[in-house]
Image 1: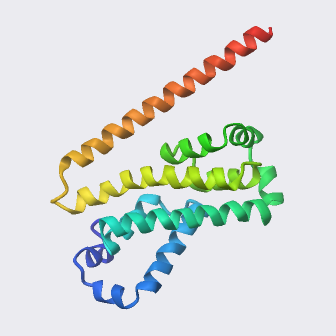
Image 2: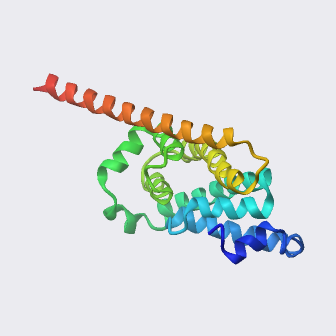
Image 3: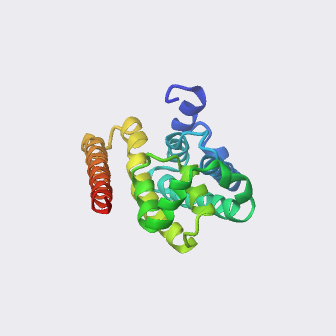
Length: 201
């Protein structure tokens, strides 16, 4: 992707004038890409964020990626709740729905920060569950802010020599720590469940 002609053209500023002249069209196209990513997850999130970074720069690219992801998540949430629930509900495992209803904000936040569940599935689960929209959207806002900031460091570090290597190392270290915390919390939860079953017996 980084060696593709279109990507190099964006990076070198060859189409920057066209972008400035058609800013709203560019924003609309990138918004559509993010909505698709939040609906089907057929477009890698890192690709969308990288394109936004190359088009709008680090700060604006991060903000637009973050804001457009919130819009996409909200649209999919309401779509699943009011338009597609009857079609989606039989195809989703009941334990996922029960988990998001039980943990609510915490489940969505953890899924956003540690994305072991596809973005689209989180949005669908939120829509078909009984979780309140305010809890869903606040967890999405906070979780995506952290995760998107970490993700945009990848293209920033690969494409800008001025970015200190420390940022990339910090990102890798933080990703490892988050993964270990997730595994520890999951193991602790499994032990708690086992203990409850033992007491019941």
